[in-house]
Image (cartoon, rainbow, N blue to C red; front, side, top):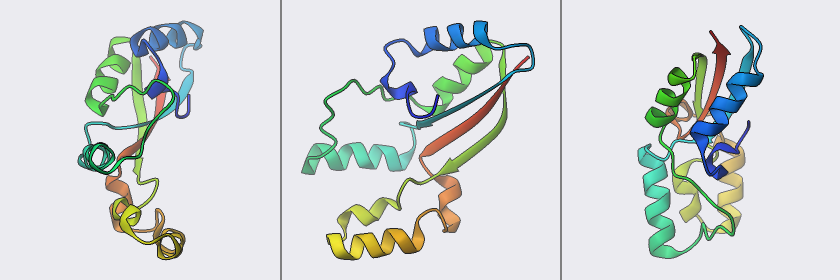
Length: 126
């Protein structure tokens, strides 16, 4: 479930159904934006103040702590967690030409990427 969690009406129901489909000791990989992360909050504020992020589809703002509780409640455990930045947060303020060069140079290659707002979780059924 790469990148779909934020677009579901009922995330808890999705985990319930996925858990039914998973074999014992089966794996599930999910990816989502941790809306509780400082960078995410900054992005939502920036979009509110300066425009952007005008989605034509539903977007749930779900924090990592909420997702972790749902995972545990459905008999899954987190085998691995990877945090990353889709782009370095301040690049959006660069002029377009400089932004592209900066992203190519630093995208996920910085020390700070491990503290990113994007989360990939490798889950395993108990």
